[in-house]
Figure 1: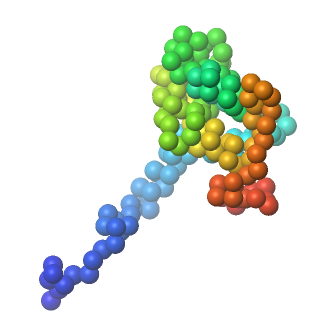
Figure 2 (figure 1 turned 90 degrees about the vertical axis):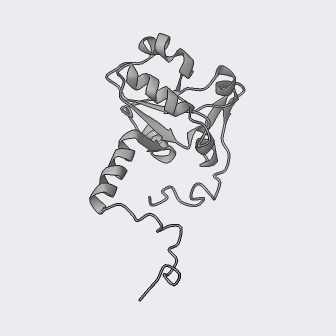
Amino acid sequence: MTTAATAPAVNPVLRVAPAAPAEAAAYFRASLVFHADVSDVAAALSADGDPGFVLLDSRSTASWDQGHVPGAVHLPTALIPEQAEQLLDKSVPVVTYCWGPGCNGATRAALALAELGYQVKEMLGGFEYWVREGFAFETWEGREQRDADALTAPVDAEDCGC
């Protein structure tokens, strides 16, 4: 007979059991409805033709000047209620970004846009991962590009295989 004192310890990963497969599928499908990753956004923007969405930088003007994704629309979160309709078409999905994973500015911008009736996704990783994955960006001084960080993107391949 196994007692509490002799029962095998459950590791921290499995202390809470994984969700049932159907629940997990619903959760991960929902996540993809709300999020896009940097490399997918970059691929869509670099392809010929209209990517089918507008990329929106929700940071301050000082942050925008420090660096932003080429072709992005600049609309700080605080200005969304009064300026979104002048800059964005409600029939075109919007993908928001801010600094990076430690910032929820893109989430706040996405919420503000959704509340105004826009279809919206958030770009995971934000501007930080755009730069770390080696994509070109613009600053107030011009265009720049850094080498890809081997911890965030494949260095010698175009596709990470995700």
